[in-house]
Image 1 (cartoon, rainbow, N blue to C red):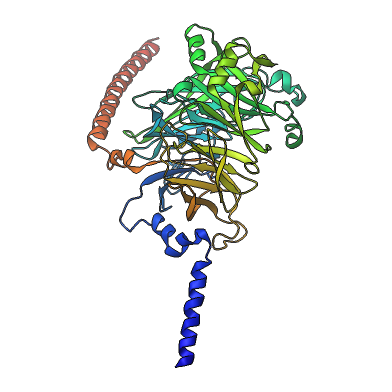
Image 2 (cartoon, rainbow, N blue to C red):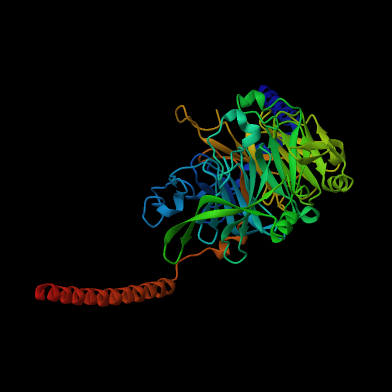
Amino acid sequence: MKNNKVVSLAVIIALGSLFACKPKNAGNAISGDAAAKAYVAPGKYDEFYNFVSGGFSGQMAVYGLPSGRLLRVVPVFSVDPEKGYGYSEESKPMLNTSHGMVPWDDLHHPELSQTNGEVDGRWLFGNANNTPRVARIDLTTFRTAEIIELPNSGGNHSSPFITENTEYVIAGTRFSVPPDDKNGDVPINSYKKNFKGTLSFISVDKTDGKMAIAFQIECPGVNFDLSHSGKGKSHGWFFFSCYNTEQANTLLEVNASQRDKDFIMAVNWKKAEEYIKAGKGKKQKVRYAHNTYSDVTHSATSEIMTDVTVLDSKELKDICYFIPCPKSPHGCDVDPSGEYIVGSGKLAALIPVFSFDKMQKAIAAKDYAGEFEGIPVIKYESALYGEVKKPGLGPLHTEFDGKGNAYTSFFVSSEIVKWNIKDLKVLDRASTFYSVGHLCIPGGDSRKPNPKYLIAYNKITKDRYLPTGPELAQSAQLFDISGDKMQLILDFPTIGEPHYAQAIAAEKIKNNSVKIFKIEEIKTLMYQKVKQLQKLYVKEIKFTYMLQRSVHILLLIILKE
C-alpha cells in the first residue's frame, strides 16, 4: 500500500513537471484550439471565398476558408473536359487568339474588382502568363465571361492589377519585345535599340464589366515583374517593379542581376488620361483577340481588333518616374493608406519602404539622379521612408492587415515575417513548409483588409502529405493573425502551382449567386433568332423564284435564236 502511494506521488510529480516545463506556445496545440478555428461543420458555410491561381493548369481554383475545402475549379485559359470548356463549339472561341486557338496557359494572379478601394465581389480578373491575355470572371456565375489579348507584350506577369474603383485593369509586359507594328525579326543583340516594354491600361465598364484596351504606354526595354495601384492619397498612380535594367539578352540569371539596384516605376495614369484626351496618343496597327461569353445564348464569340492607342513615355516626361530599388525587385505593394510603397528585392537583405509624399516632393523639386532611357530617376534617399533591416532571406510579397502591420513572404528562409510599417521593426516570424511564394490576407491589397487570416502558398511540400510518387501535392497554409502572434491552424493542398490569391468575405458574393438561368430571356432570344431566320428564308425563297424566272426567260430567248 505504501509502495502504491509512493508510485502515485511520483506520477503526480512527473505530470506536474511535464506541464510546468512545456513550451510557452504549446498550449494551443494541446488544447486543440487550432483545429477548432479551422473547423466548419458539415452543412455549414465558410466565412470566406479564397480565389487561388491554378498556375500551370491555366485555371482558377475556389476554396472556402477556414476549412480549405475546394468548391470549384473555374476554367479560364485551358481546356477543361469536365465542363466541356474549349471542347464544345459554343466555348471554343474563348480560347482564340491572334495566333489561332491556344488551349493552355499559366494563370498567375487573381484580382478582385474594387469600389472605393474595397473589394466588392462583382468580378475576378486573371492573367495568362504566356500568351499575354487578361480574363474577367463573373462572380454571379463563376464563369469566365471575357478574355482580351494584349498586343506589344511578351509574357504578362505584372498583371492584372486594378485601380481602386476598377477604372482600369493594368498589365505590364514581363519581357520587352519589338512593337507589333515593327519588324520583329531582329538580332537579339539589338535589344537596347529595338525592344520596348509596354504597359496596357484596360478600361472596365462599371455596369457590365466589359473590357477594352483604352491605351498603352511604351516604356524602356526592361522587365516588368509585379505591380499595384495607389490608394487614397496616391490614387491616380500605379507602381511597377522592374528588373534587368542592365538590358541583358543572354545568360539572364547572371547578366540581369549585375546592378545593386533596379527600379520601381511610378506611373501617373491620371496624367496619361489627360494626354489621351489631348490627342497625344498615336494609333498603332496591331492584331489581338477579344472574346466574350453570353449567359443568354450560352455561347462565345471572338473578334479580332486591329489598332491600339500608344503614349510614348520618352516624349511625355511627366507620366513615368523611376525609383532605385535593391535588388531585382519582385513584389511591389502599397499599404492601405496609399502612403507606403514596399519593394521586395529577391536578392536583397533588406526591405525598402518608399514614401508617396516624399516622392511627390522629389518630383516637384526635380530631385533626380539623372535619367534612364529618357525617364527621370528620383534619388533613392529622396523617396525612401526607411528600410526593414535583416528581415529574412529572399523577400517576395507583402500584404497588410489594416492595423499598421505588414506581412512579407521569404522564399529562401521559408517564413512569413510580420513588421510594423511606421517603425519598421520585426514583430513576429512564422515558419512555412516550405519555400513560400505568395501570401494573402482577405482584402490585403485594398484600403480595408480583414485582419483575421493569412494564407501562405508554398512551392514545396516535401513531407507534409501522404506521398503520391515523384510529384507531390501543392500546398497552402492558413494562419490566424487576429492576435499579436501568427498561429498556424491548417494545411491544405491546392491544384496547379499556386501563385497569388485573393480572399473575400462570403456575404459579398453568395447572396448574388445565380441559381438558375431565366428561361424567358432564352425564349425571347430564340424567338428573335427564329424571326431573323424566317426573314432570311423568305428573302431566299423570293431570290430563288426570281432566279428561276430569269433562267427560264433566258432559255426561251436562246431557243428562239
